[in-house]
Amino acid sequence: MNNLSFTLWNDLDQFQLGASNARPGVYLGHQAAFLDQTGSAVFLRNEIPFTCFRLRAEVAIPGRVGFVGLVFGAKDDSNYELVYLAPEEIQYDPIMNGSMTWQMNNGPMYQKPLPDTTGKWVDFSVEVQPNGAAVYMGREATPQLVIPHLQHGDPTGKIGFWGFLPCYIRNLVIEEIQPEPITKRAKDLKQLSAETFVTEWMVSTLTGNQWKKRVVEENGILNFNRCYTAEQGGVAQALSTFYLDEDQESLLTFGFSDQIRLWVNEEEVYQGQWTWNPPVSDGRIRSDYASVHIQWRAGINTIRAEVRNTELFGWGLCMKTGLSNMSYPPEEIE
Image (cartoon, rainbow, N blue to C red; front, side):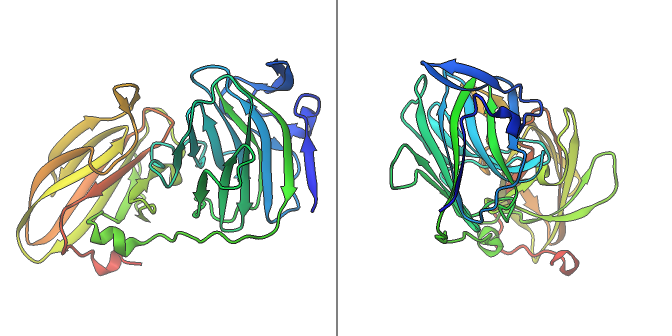
């Protein structure tokens, strides 16, 4: 099988460094590329000729806070698949329209806790197949994390590496591997509806009036980063309209990032903020973060939200109505 290899301390000219400020460095006696910017990717100038491949490198995080990752399937500089190592965690964090999305991609489908790797060199690799990826630590034969649904779809595109705060990476190898299908995890909107997630929304920016139909991600989250480029203070609005056969009461539960105003049938029922502020809060979107008792009416009901972006880690909304018999208008169903 074919492979390409890069030391990363004397061949960085073969990469598009962008705003990364990647440069040669030394850590624990080993030469490497050093990164200390916030969330910048470095791309190999040429696309690789492999359909199925393994990205492997030695990586190190010198401090208690830092992140270093491998990039693949880059559609452009702002949209790519990213898997990174934190001192005590692996995280799948697809970059969408320039924004990290880890606040939406949380839980065992996207994360794996690890023993502390701070201050040491470790082997980190990702095996990429057309329908998914598997993440390995060291020379273990069993993957630490399997990703059966790549958020950008086809992983064809440029590869590279990524850092957030001080980190090191060396000896990047790209190896062609045999096809080994990963069982795809399909989005199941019927199951999400059975769990009373709101799955269908109309979305627009606050200043615009161009409403577009959007359905939620596989975990029930409405992902504004997939729709818009995140900007500090940007506001997206979402509207869901549905029918009920009779008056009902339920507990509406929801999660969001970063600030929200929420209306039910045009009556404001909630305002709040949820951001990354450890150890008080991790800012991750979960459907049970907040709740409001709602008296629904027979016929048409609406839920409307304005969600403000104050961070660049994920911008979204997740909601469960607690209603088992709601139905969407036919014109909103694809």
